[in-house]
Image (cartoon, rainbow, N blue to C red; front, side, top):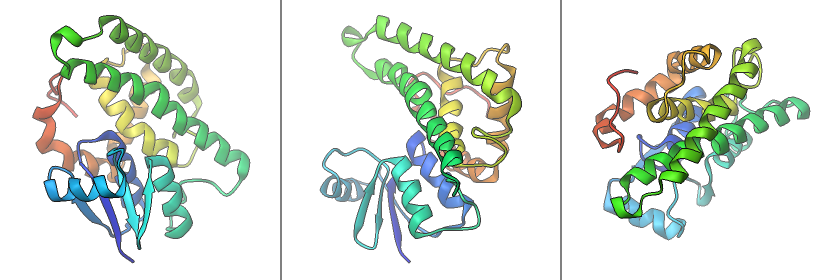
Length: 217
């Protein structure tokens, strides 16, 4: 088996896939996208130039959630990240979409605004993104009051999504102390060995965080 992952350790969506790979100890070749040769390969595989991208024996797989679904289908391991039960799987996929759409997306909107030329920045868009994060934290706090992991008692695809989403969201728009369940969940994710490994791999790139990486985590 030869899996080739086009990714960068500091990217939240790349970390999401790395967690899934590490959970099941799947060997893979990392094609680091700070290498121009690897980026040229990525561009040929996926002209939209979004990452991560997985190549599995000649088959190109795009989008982080789909990559994790692909891994479970073709390279199953001891940790099942999408439940067999269709109803449980639906909850996992729902939470996965929540973290991607309502945590990662507004968080990214704030960060990408910061790297624009000052004349092109969008203060109103940033205000909207911060409001979305506040609403997301509030809703999630209620959900996590009775859950250990995002979709229940078992670590899943949803937690692969949640870990980097909440990691960077707290850097970007701090999770207030009143959201105690969200903060506790974020700490559980940071303690998970698969995500702790991804965080450590990304440490050298922290000076690149446009808003300034806090001295923690």
